[in-house]
Image 1 (cartoon, rainbow, N blue to C red):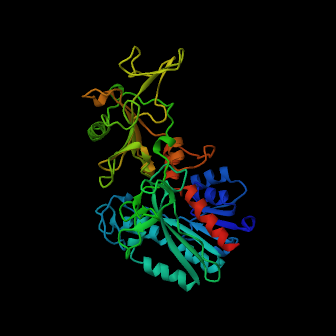
Image 2: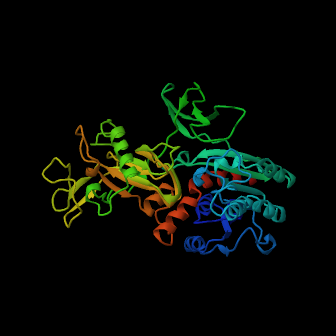
Length: 463
């Protein structure tokens, strides 16, 4: 049946949704976007798909072919805290901004109007199912309930799935999103209850974790903040399995010593790195010297530091995460044995003809994300959310001495390829454009693993 399932990818971007749908066995016939660079990337990877470079807000759905399923990712920046503005309701977000308020309000209202575009297309094409991705904060949009009612008027039933991408393997990123799944009333309801695998210490076995809301009457929100996972047998809180940020990091790339940088880091950045040292330097996170961590250099409302063994924080449009790692000197002429700074070969040095600064998987480092006051993350956790700008840096340091100087740490920004891995795009996937354009495309993308999971369930319901 999946071979007969055709898909329109609205607001296709770099192709995260298309990749997931294709992996699920669907045929993406049409991809539409307003940004030429995104269309170039999508066409490079999916040359057999019909591509349309157009402003969907102005496009006439009658001019495009019908498909079985519509997948869409309306612009989310005006619904999310990525805008950096505190709000309770999003009816007139940014209306009172001092700089060009009329233009800003018009642009943001136009952004939110894209939420209505899938309805216009569904009314004409009568798709059998729709999968729409957006940020969790979209429920604060005042017309949201009216928007839901409009789907009912088109003879659709629907369900909202709130899922963190770190539980859709193999995405090593903590990325909370809302997935709106709609289907024609005459069709079967898709099985949309997500039960990620987890280990229950009490039952001493793997179980299918059950999502439990902290406030049952408010079933929307983010992992840990509004909902948790519990064991279906003993009802104890458990953490589902996830891929760590370390899985997305290219440990062969050097992290230059901060003290050797030609352009000094900002004082706020240095302070965040110092916070990471204080938090992780002497904690026995692994068998290595010091656990790597991520540093968030922007948002004050999120964790400034997390270990690299933890999930990557949500990637946004900005390059805002730094990776701090303990640098090792690798002798390419000898036994390829990493040596600490206390050994004969100093770890803290520039890469030369016969030595390079490397951090093997699992070694102690951390990531720093540039969101306002920053976020530090251990590499054992998932990567902080990937945005559309470069915001992740790798930080390392060399020894377990009582006092570790910030200038002796290694520091580098994550590369677009590492961000691509954090989004769980295939390694061979081609993202075109400049470094900034690549990061923007990746940060705006849907994680393919989640779309694959949802598309498989929707296809099964149409069989």
